[in-house]
Length: 88
Image 1 (tube, rainbow, N blue to C red):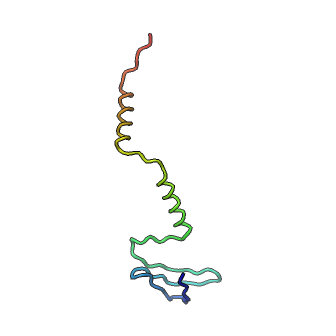
Image 2: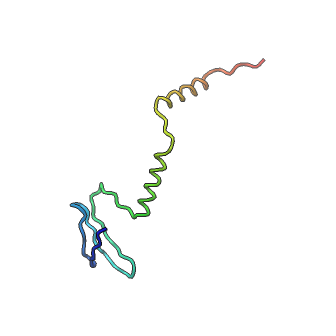
Image 3: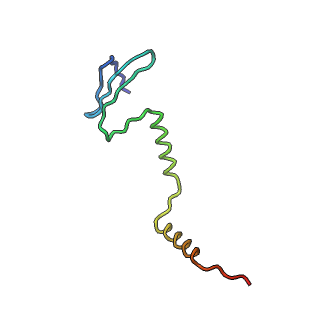
């Protein structure tokens, strides 16, 4: 990990497109500003971890291919349109 010392209004660059600026320091809190291209997602770590966990959970859900789904819908449709047998 790279550790840098910066004062208020000083910045660091990450690559060519991300600029991190120290906006304010009060006690044990540091406010930072991040300038980045719109296509770069910026999240607090705890939010990022929640997103990753949800994505992982979604990836583990059972998937069904289109052919199987089509067959299931066709079977249901044919059952729904068949006349009920009369009871004697």
